[in-house]
Amino acid sequence: MPHPIASPLAFVPFVSVDDMMKLVNKTGIEKVLTELAAYIEADFKRWPEFDKTPRVASHSDEGVIELMPTADAENYGFKYVNGHPKNMKEGYQTVTAFGVLSSVSNGYPILLSEMTILTALRTAATSALVAKYLAPTGATTMALIGNGAQCEFQALAFKAICGVDTVRLYDVDPAATEKAVKNLSSTGLNIVACSTGQDAIEGAGIITTCTADKLCATILTDNMVGAGVHINAIGGDCPGKTELHRDILTRSDIFVEYPPQTRIEGEIQQLAEDYPVTELWQVMLGQAEGRKDARQITLFDSVGFAIEDFSALRFISDKIKDHPFYEPLDMLADPDDPRDLFGMVTRRK
Image (cartoon, rainbow, N blue to C red; front, side, top):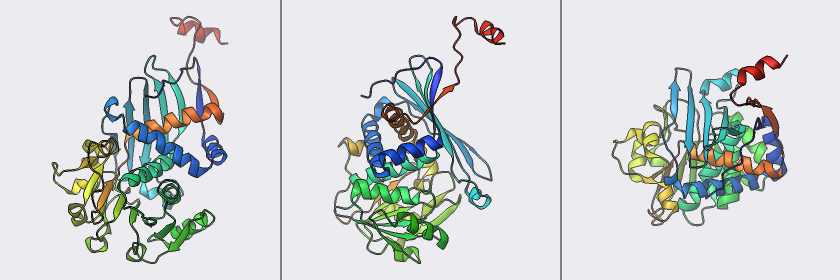
């Protein structure tokens, strides 16, 4: 079990966007993804210890704003995150986020961090971690459909954790694919730009879909998916937003993070409420089967769950002990006498 993180008095470490970029570049992105996956795996393997609830979401016609909380016996964490597909056209990020990790013993926050970059890292690390358990043996080619902000993180996570060496890219916007090809050109991966989704999945043992539109789309049709593949579906993550044809689901063995949340937000919102799915933590502990044979289609219906963010915050809190990329933030009142908050205020003149 992880040790609780020592609580400060008044100053809270704040990891800014600049700090996060420095930490990632200092460590190396593939090493960060590998180390982060290890934290996520450790927390999945103690899943019953966590206080769990579906994220609290506020939906609008424009997008969604969510809070994602969880806690174990020592620490509490939450992430604030939005999802606004229209933002890209207006020059904004589709997803932005920040997170807080606190001590359960006294309620004091012990870390405040940007999580726009960190969410991309933890999503990619989770995807590759799950594929380590579910992907067909020897799969080295991945199709990546949807080449937006998550694309390169996914490619590098699968390279570092699963041994993928070839990534076949497709996006409805050719400029997105061009961007991804450029960014991945010096990573050691064999990058293939494709003109259609069907072209992208040719020869791929792993298919990742990560599109952003807030609608019921059909990125993969049933006839596109052959036997023996692993599908990493990460784009469907809110009510009314899916990527896969329903018939693909009924041909697949489906693996999820937290069923009460996934049934609302994931691909399985297309299925009956009691449709059988397998929880990933049980696979990781050997309590449930993962991949059974070479012809099985495995589907990770990924929506992102708060424990993954908790793991990411825990990882960063540990990481900044060796790499002090943070700023002390004066955000907690600390009067000499805990009962005399008023006196502390009036004496500050």
